[in-house]
Length: 279
Picture 1 (cartoon, one colour):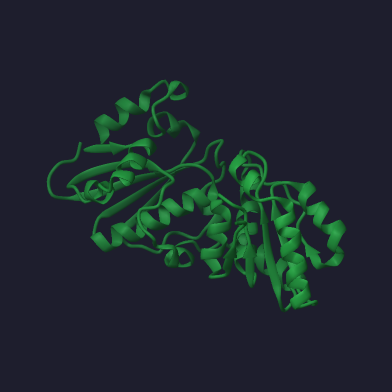
Picture 2 (tube, helix red, strand yellow):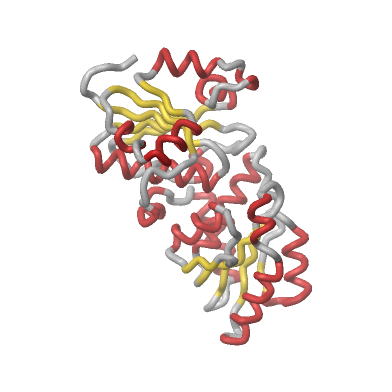
């Protein structure tokens, strides 16, 4: 346990790719402004089974370090539950001055006392996918694609993008809020409207549902560009492909995104493209 006036935050970002990016980005900027040391523990597990270095270049901060860990680290650093034998409750109590699991972060944020807790002396442990302030303007500076990801994105956009390419992100699978709030008709109407305004426009469709891509392709033909990829969270290759999708979307002129999807939000923030969501 660390005491005294020194301040340090240990962040374990959880959830999927966009959720982790949101947490790391905002915490990196918050701690930089507050002159607090930051150490990120990036765990490859079933939620996101890929190391940070496969997806991004190192964080560009002298005050922040990042450590890659495997699934075993979930026993020590994820919220206490039956799946990790509740070991994290004991481990974090012994290792850190204070600890905030994701429910604690949610409650503190809603109560308006999160920043006060983060500024306390000692070492604060946080497991979360929340943001810690609006630092979306710094996302592109903090998350630069790895060499492999950048080359794939550059090659695809140079071969397939039109002078005006619009992004379409359709989130399906396990996101019930997004499915309910983002009907396929919203995207069809958006494409028709854009084509009426600019007939030469093309549309990059990113989705975790191949049927949605196929449906739009049948309706709009060669106006639709997409990739036949599988973005499984539990496989490194799938997460790399998802990161490529994120950066490709970020380079479109405008994004029609899915309701309640952090992926749509991160793509917009990365490239500064206008994000339009279903109402």
